[in-house]
Amino acid sequence: MAAKIETGASSDEYVTYAPPGYKCQSCGKAIKSLDPVRRVHIERVSGSPVVHYRHTGCIR
Image 1 (cartoon, rainbow, N blue to C red):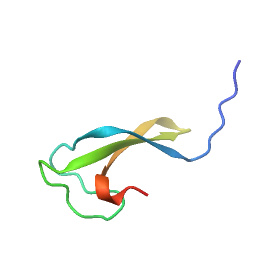
Image 2: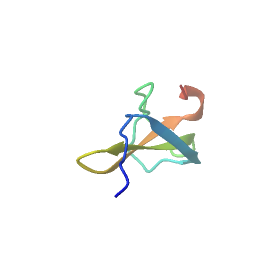
Image 3: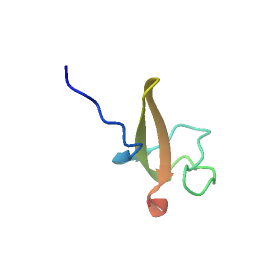
Image 4: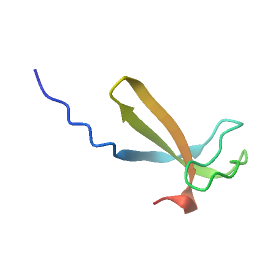
């Protein structure tokens, strides 16, 4: 069986538009309906990945 190494790193997937009600994970500001954002998923050991959205200008 292959071992999975948990690094806590996230990966930016692609530019998209966030569903209503989301806040930017980096700056904490509300994401407007037509703001381009990066969809990011963060792997967790104890369950399915968590999805976050970040403004394209807030990418670390």
